[in-house]
Length: 408
Image 1 (tube, helix red, strand yellow):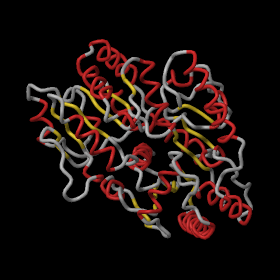
Image 2 (cartoon, rainbow, N blue to C red):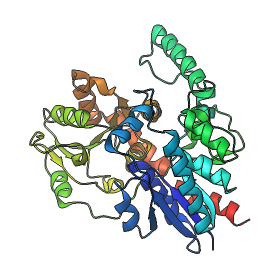
Image 3 (cartoon, helix red, strand yellow):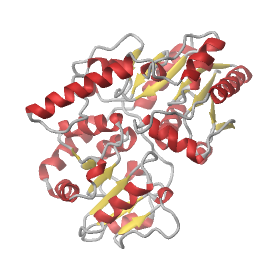
C-alpha cells in the first residue's frame, strides 16, 4: 500500500472534483489523503469517503478574489506573500513526511511544486492542455481577439505572441516562489509556465485537442476527467424536463461572480424557457432572479443528458466536458484564457457557440441561446462528440499512470 496526497485548491469546484475522481480510480490498496486550506468543497471529499487534513494558513475572502483576478489576468498582484508561501511549504512538507507519501497529486496549489520536490516525492498534475507550456509555445492564435477576418486574425496573432513571451519567458511569478524555493533547495519558479508544470503532467483532453502539437516526455494524455457527484437529481429538474418549454442549464462553476450570475439569469428570464441554475453560492440575500430561473444546489450534471436541451457555461473544463459527454450543445462564455480555449475547441467541433462574458447583456447572447436550443446542426454535432467521449476515462488512466510510478 502507498499513500497518495491530493492537493486541490478546495475553493475551486473543478479541481476538487477532478482530484476526487482520480482518487476513486486508484487501486483500493492505496491510501488517498486530501489536504486543503479553504473549506468550500471539502464536504464533497468527505462525502466521497476520503481522509481530509485541514491546513493553515488559509485565505480571506478578499485574498481568494485577488487570486481569481490574478489567475484571470485582471490583476497584477497576487496574495502569495513570502510568509504565506513559506508557511504553506512547511505545512505540506510535514504532511508528506507524516503520511510517508509516495506521490503528490495537485490542482493549481502552486506551493506543492516546492514542497513535493523538496521532499523528493514525484509530483503529478492532471491538467487541461490549455495554458500549459507546450500549448502556449506552439499555438499561433489563442482567440484573445474574436473573428475570422484578416484584421482579427492578425490582431490575435500579435496578442498571442505577446502573451507567449509574458507566459513562458518573463520573470513575472511572485518573487516569494523563487525565494522560498531556494530556501528549500529546489529550482526557483520565475515564469507563469513554471508555476503550472509538475514532474508528470496528465492531460485531461480528447485526442483532437492535441492535433498538430508535439508533447515533451513529461506530458501524456489521459482523457477527460469531470465530476460525477454522488447525489440524486432533484425532482424539480425532472419536473421541468417534462414541461413543454425547453430546459436550459446555467452552470458558472466557482470562478464567476455575482454580477455575471445575475446578468445571465436576467437575460435567460426573457426567453420562453425554463432554467436550472446552481448559482446560489454567488447570490446575496435580497437578490432576485426571474420566475423561470430555478436556483438549485450543485447538480449531478453528468446525469443531465436527455433532461436539458441546452446549457450556458462559464467555460471551465469540467463543465465543458460534462456537456460534451452528455450530448448537450452549449453557449460558452470563457472568463479567462484557458476557458476561452476550452470553448473554442468545442466551437470548432460544432457543438458550441462562444459569447464573451462582457456581451451577456447584449442581443447576441440571447440569439446564441436560441440557436443552441433550436439548431439541428449543433445538436447533431453534440451527439457526435458524445459518441467520441464514450469509452474515455481520464480518471482511470491518470490513476494507472500514478500507480506505475509508485509501484516501482
